[in-house]
Image 1 (cartoon, rainbow, N blue to C red):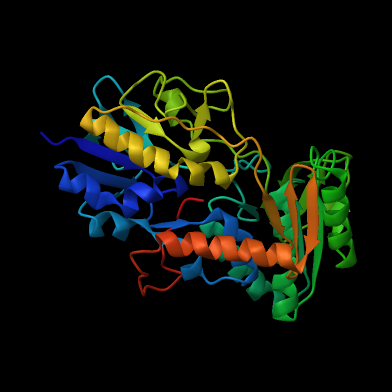
Image 2: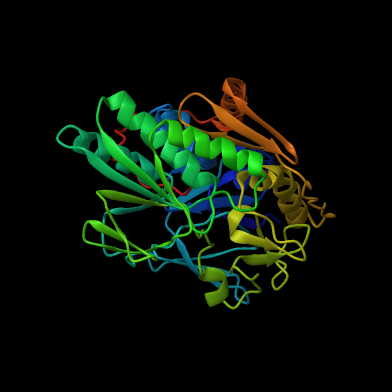
Length: 383
């Protein structure tokens, strides 16, 4: 007898399942995708979306259509609580759905620690769809004034946002003051060569970098810093402190230190064998992983195999994280910084390599086309 598999979120780690949904349907199983949006935006191309390097239809997957084209169902909603004992998912709409197995790939978010969500001046780096809205706001502002743009976060995301904001302003023919609040130290934990190249790239374009200070709050049109100084701002981009949603903790499931669903190396929940997960919303037992997209992408075939195996009562396979991964920063000026272990390279070709990798990844899963609805009416997707 067929079973019911629910995919919660259409993120990177669920794409292989969605692309091959017919395999599940042909074996008599039902599959339902639950997501607050029909679209999933690829985070690796988010900064390029902000600058205008990429158009929206180049950086998103129509996961809703992938589900229905494959013979499954799509429910535009959000899971707010898991009843693992009753095998029920409770939704924001008030409805609930029963499952035999469920898999979570809901990504992560950036809590607005500066205002508590009380001002529209703060733009979290996730969800990625928000960067498209911010782009339109900046273009409108540049038409009448010199914009004051602040990026909070000294990691790779902060660097890429700054570089691509510079490109947006330049291409629009406008003027802006760009400031990066880097916390204790820019790119802390990265090789000095990466840090030096990033600092030089930002400096040569007039982007101000502050180190040794943190942003404490946004009050009106000011960012209050930990050294009691203030920065004038029109928009503040928040690129620090991503974390999974709180539904796993609130549902009484086993979680990691960051609140992500605690899973073993088969990506199966330690507290409920009917639950699986991938990407930023999980915590791998004994080896918590950095929140980088490469792991979600590598978990794609594992989840595909193991979800089918769970439905068919077959043996599961194991996810073995790579010890080293390649990072390429899109600096926004047609150049990139590549780092893999001790290898550090910069220039035009690292960016071209990143662009080729990203476009190839998109082409592999953009199997359901694009809708023609306007970008302003497209619902917000997960990053």
